[in-house]
Amino acid sequence: MNEIIAQKLSLLPDSPGCYQMKENGKIIYVGKAVNLKNRVRSYFHGRDHTPKVAAMVSHITDFDIILCRTNLEALILECNLIKLYKPYYNILLKDDKHYPYIRVNLNEPFPRVTLARRQASDGAKYFGPYIGATAVREVLEHLKKLFPLRTCSHHLPEHGPKRPCMNYEIGRCPGPCCGKCTREEYGAVVQRVISFLGGRYQEVTRDLEAEMKAAASALQFEKAARLRDQIRDIEGLMQRQQAIQTSGAEQDVFALVQDDLDAMAQVLYVRGGRILGGDSFALPREGREEPGEVLFDFIVQFYEDERKPAREVLCPGLPAEISEDLTEWLRRRRGGPCTLTIPQRGDKRALTLLAEKNARDALEKRNAKKQVQYERTIGAAEELARYIGLDAVPRRIEGYDISNTQGAQNVASMVVFLDGEPAPKEYRHYRIKSFEGANDFASMNEVLSRRFKRCFAEDEKDRWPLPDLVLIDGGPEQLAFAREAMLREGADVPMFGLAKRLEEIFLPGREESILIDHHSPALHLIQRIRDEAHRFAITYHRDLRGKASVHSALEDIPGIGPARRTALLQYFKSVKAVREADVEELQKVPGMNAKAAKAVYLWAHPEEEENQEDQARGSV
Image: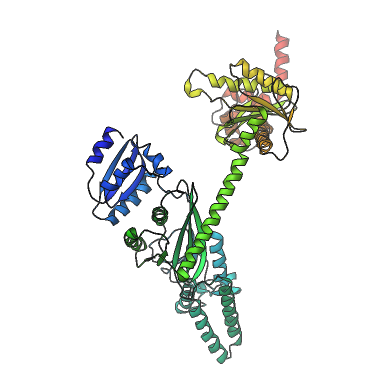
């Protein structure tokens, strides 16, 4: 604890507010407290900190406070500060998805049903969120079949009748653009859509049954049959959804599980008494923190991201002393009534247990995925180090490959893997400059020389970091040329070659090759590096070869650069017309002078240039 912190601790007030922990002026944590004096002092005087808190405290060099009048004000301020500064030790949702909604635009005379990425206060009705655009499009497709509404973007009503479109002909649109239905008839269908999306499908089927019976009584049997099929489709769709309650509840269900390192939060979305979906959120470094506080912070962050709370929020294990403030905050975020429930038994408790089960499953899958990822990357690098006898695990591994076509367009590639993962921003291309023709050994020597020369550049900004390990695509000969170039530039980095035939590893100064088990992650890692270097070299080579094949005949004329070539083609429209033009016509082209025009004319008529040369020799 430095003098600045000690002085500020002695002046802390007994007041609610927010505190900002800083490291060299940068905010690394934002918190709120009912009593700032007790809460902030606990960080520096307490001993039984969790690993996360202990790590944070070790980095604190200063802190600031902002006083508030109430706990609710402190909560709102904390949300705003976290959103603004994104401190490292706060819970930050790495979620860039915007869950889609179904939007019914009631501001239009003939409303449409569309997909929306965000809710807005525009007078339209929104339903959702749905987990993924696929789910929304599936619902919209069902709506098209069940409730014919227009999908066009015409501004209705329009002046004069229009010809009905195909959707009208197949029964997917009532035809408001051509006067086939009134606003009242169309509005009745819109209200059925709203009731259906709101979970009140019984009202929809009841109205349709009444309309079906009326049509049958009026001997309109085709209409009655169409309504009967519509009712059957609605009931079939509802039976396929998971019914969990009969009350038509609108709920967001939260749960949290932890291991010794991380935590996983789960949210289930219940709309109209049915689970529409859910999502899980990984919370790194929160595995040993107080579960109630972690869940509280998560809920606040969750709803700060343009989401609105459901009418009821179910949240187990939330501390009672903060639930009242959270309830008031949720009501403000929703802009209407919102109940925070901490269920102990019954159906609501079953829902939170279901959310917890999903959270545990997501955490297990994440850990398993991380383990596989570790084995493929850092674990593979550790195993590779053991195979080739390195004292330390190579963090930066570079791979090199040569590509050419019978000596033409001779290029090389350098790819970089950091901690077993590709780092494309570090990749580099090389064009072989010291010679022409096919010589992979000399090419590799030149590339490695140019690469390691960069490690010792005079200007520090131009220096490249030394790799921990270098992979050469080739056998002992390529390896020898590459190592000779590296040593010549004053570097000495572990290097090995990989021969493709048997996937043999060759080390400098060692005659016997090393064969790694084909199921080994180490072999898979070096194969990925080798293949990536090959791909990168081939891609660059093809690009250069493609550019070389696109060649204009005008490029061969001395004194005619890109600007004049463009001007000639724009003026004459084709190379053939340029060839047929005389000197006077060529001089009319913008940017052309007499000398350039004559050069183009002689290029198009080489026989005249030969005659001029013969005449010059004869006069001599």
